[in-house]
Length: 345
Ligand code: HEB
Ligand code: CA
Image 1 (cartoon, rainbow, N blue to C red):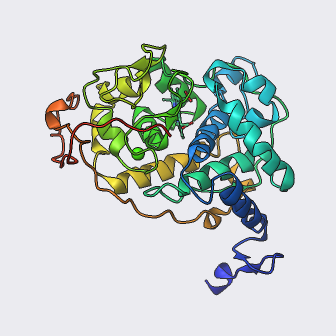
Image 2: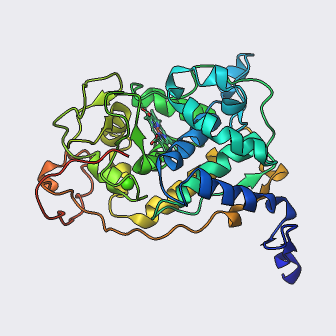
């Protein structure tokens, strides 16, 4: 056991690591925290970096390969390496910005592009209180060709289309239940381009916290469009400033997933454990884990949540659209004060 725990001294003279391949990540971490994440904040770039991990990784299709067509390489960096092609795909709208912001960091460090994208997403998420420590691996093979169009889910896709796509990309691992786990990411998220008149509109009232408010607030009755909606992929949200994707609305209410969705409300342990699990697997799509080195130790352990789960001011359980018949909605306090609007990110 002693031999297994032996650490190496990194060439920087400061850090130690379980494997020397992890040493290079300390400088990348420092640079990103300072110069992309505004001093280790859960800022818009942290959100966008997390989104980018998904859009790189999900572009892989064994079903296309079975038909004799190239199906993409998964978490292979293709979205940045061939950004002129892939960021022009409709579901990747807006990602050109974070790809260009990350590019100088990739250029000044010696990490592969695929590894960099997943590392930046895991690191950005670690700045959000309540987040799990997401995994970081090095050694992925970088893409030599772009992924084909049509593999990234859209907010106007039906649950069936989304479930089928995730099942294909994961070779059957990501079923509807695990798709709910993946959507935990929308707790630290906003929409910029679905309604371009209101950029930075969050999906829950706490886009800076990796909490379960997203799962609660998506179950509130929709009453308004926060901008000039309806836009394609948008449905009514419960409060001003908050944005609701049609796909989140539909999966929250689908009979296959409604109870799983509700089960995340006020269950921070589940929020952390399930997202940590699915991110690990998603971040390795198209790669062979036995060729990689686990450097998760370089990702800081995130701070705990600052706020308990609550109904936003002016809402109670009477505003919930019950979609799960089996389990009662948890009893939760309402934040004091009058109804407010959610500020943009
Ligand atoms: Fe997500 C965002 C969709 C999944 C992460 N998304 C977002 C949006 C949309 C979506 C539309 C907005 C954009 C703009 O800007 O406008 N998603 C979606 C869908 C799906 C998803 C359809 C399938 C179901 N996501 C997902 C996942 C993840 C994510 C899995 C991870 C992992 N997203 C995300 C984030 C965000 C989003 C983080 C935010 C970004 C910002 O804030 O910028
Ligand atoms: Ca949140």
